[in-house]
Amino acid sequence: MKKYWIPILILAVPLVLLGLTGCSKQPGTGEEAAEETEQPAEEAAETAAKPPAPKMNDDVYVEIKARSALIYEKYKDDPDQAQKEIEALYEKKGVTFAEYKEFSGKLTFQQTNDLEKRVVDFMQKIAQEYR
Image (cartoon, rainbow, N blue to C red):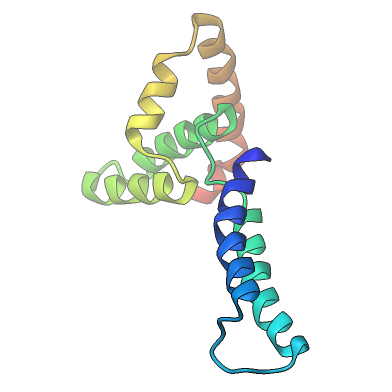
């Protein structure tokens, strides 16, 4: 939550200062000026409220690994198409191959075994999508 306050303050302070000094495009009533300053503040709050891009976690790892295996199986005769599909998968999930490899490199033996079981279960669940 703290990380959202800095961008809000950066956007809000100049708006407040502009309001105090009377700098505006056109002189108007107090209500018009208030509406003008509220709109950018509301837009900034909406932008700041958006969640950050997803990061690599167990669920993303399981989905990428399962879907990658099924994609390679589907396009076993066309590796270029398989690679394009895999790249699109990483993009859709908002992670890079480097992040995936880093995450998988940090897994313990037990975590890897647990996730592999989840991968197999997930592959069985979504296999019809790739046939």
